[in-house]
Length: 131
Image 1 (cartoon, rainbow, N blue to C red):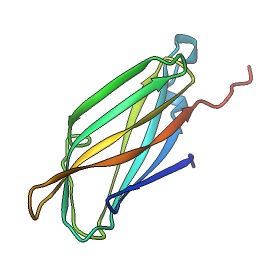
Image 2: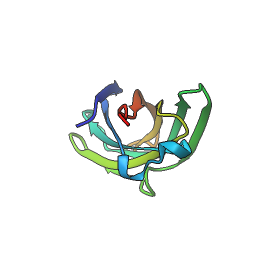
Image 3: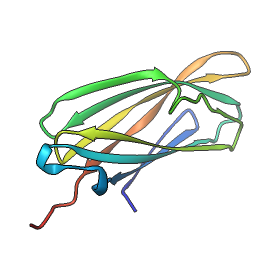
């Protein structure tokens, strides 16, 4: 089990767990693969739709990249009050550790207003290898 990170914005809770993908990583080639599982819980009284995601990825060298786009893994899930949406995605790094954080853009379906939800900053760390 990975480390868990949590943030709550406007009664929407985002939980992230990150995992190192040993079988897909090639440290000798500076290729480290991490998976992360995200759980979004709607504790508001509104039905909401996830429109966009905006990620910042920072590797161990301090190099920063951005990912911005529609939905999550090709979906724009709708969450009714007390509903949960979970998905798994991944990230490649050139260093054995890094971090990610960002925001989701949500729409309140009742009136079409949009608001941002924080994705908590989380660490991705490859376990030390004994050779």
